[in-house]
Image (cartoon, rainbow, N blue to C red; front, side, top):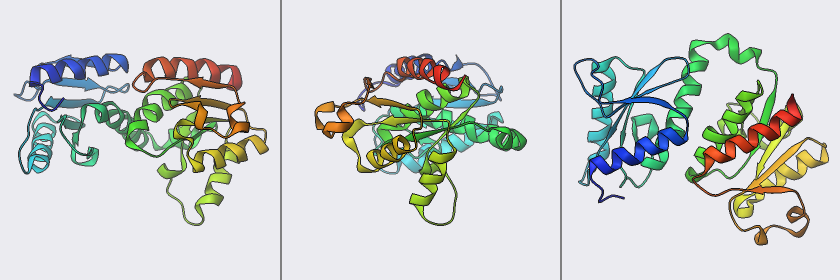
Length: 252
């Protein structure tokens, strides 16, 4: 994808935004600029997205400067420069890959909502615990599918690596699972931490929804017997519909 033209990158970005049901406009004048995309959060906040086909030393620094320039000049709530050839996503600097854009936007939507309405965070009583691999390729599963589905049933989806806490991480995992009304378990890659968290949830008889994007042949025999929904990587739009239906049957 690194060799694609910026126009081709823009088309790919537009497809990803549509798949995630995100509202956006293209090349609309704002603050004297005409960015490639303006993406709107559910609460009306605006985020600029620019596509770049750059490939030169120091491109991350330059892209970060440009993202900050667009945010300041257009007075928006954030800006991202999308560069397909990046080795890793740097959402905190406003620089992401095509695959990292939607997760970065969804994370920003959640964080800005929390800052704008801190009282709403304390009102949320229903927790959906996410037991899943901690890797960039699963960020869209969490932000686009799991978090969306939880929101549809008046709950919040969370995972232990996104929490600020003091003490033992295993104790925090236990606390979160005990507090949860349901657990979504992503068995992809058969990660030990996920199997442990799933086992603890099952021991507490918590309602569990199992999903997997990799071969189930590698799962332990007893785990392979669980009812599991298989999904394709990159098809989080379909996955979130499935998760929403499953959670409604459990939580509502």
